[in-house]
Length: 422
Image (cartoon, rainbow, N blue to C red; front, top):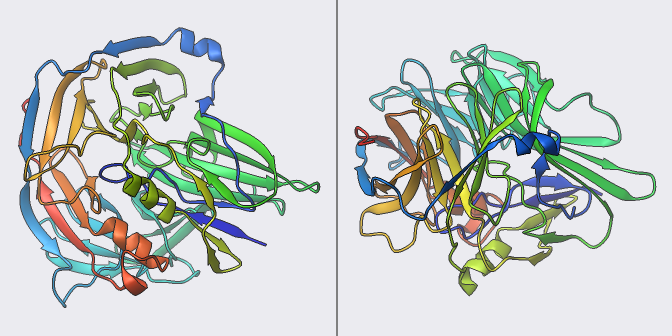
């Protein structure tokens, strides 16, 4: 029997806090712990910030450059990831149609890369896209713990297995992977089932070689549980698998290790904890509707059939939802209250910290996006891409109610970020 839990990455008002994971039974997970010895954390600097930024709130009005998918000439299914090359060309990963669409900096359609399948250079429901250190495109496959590579001319490349040697008793996964300046960091996992029916699962955030070998570990949690009735516990399963970590321009790694604390752990590329950034923060309480949406976002596939497991959902969303770092080392944090009580035209706010961890500003991102359904991808200091209908498209892929039948109707909007005032 194979079980697969499907969940949504937290979007907008944090209606969900689930990650996609594959298991032979539900794993009760404690909070992530530092991969290094606890003594290392004692030498790390704690940067404590108050509730308000030093320089106040600044509105960043994004300038629309182009959009695609809003007419019959270009159809998307579910855009789940985006990346950009050195020439400014933008590549969009469509998880539903299992292909990558390439566009020029001006929005001209260039070509379609890859296709659905399991052969060289082919993908199936990939959920991450990046440029690998050798400049090939890599499509991240969670279920197999691998990256399928192909170049910009659509020539198939390697398929790279992450997380160590494959064994008959283990199932590897790769939730997310990022490359910045040749530093390759990803969130991976290993599930093992003992002869006695015990499931042992380890999730970890680590640094890898281009061949997929782990060379440093930042965070991890390991649990053992007997197989039983499938269920989901939101708090116990927390790990910053996708949005909760980022890589800086110098290879520094940032991670939201604790679900219920506004706390960002900062590691050097080799895995040493060097700083912990904190901010006074009180997350808002979820509405009943939002808790119901979390439950609706949990789907279990048992031998190909959809089953909804019993779910335990928290009254409060995770404090931190997304992190990214610009080319100057400024850290941007999207938190549980980012979409609350925003004026017309503002999608959400981001907290901005300088390289030393000081809370310097709040950035109000002004664009047409809906924080409950759309997702913004940060592609560098001057470009963002909005995936319209990201959440509903994802639910539709698995037969959910948000989009009947999962028919393609996504749209991509490319924005220019204005000059930053900090």
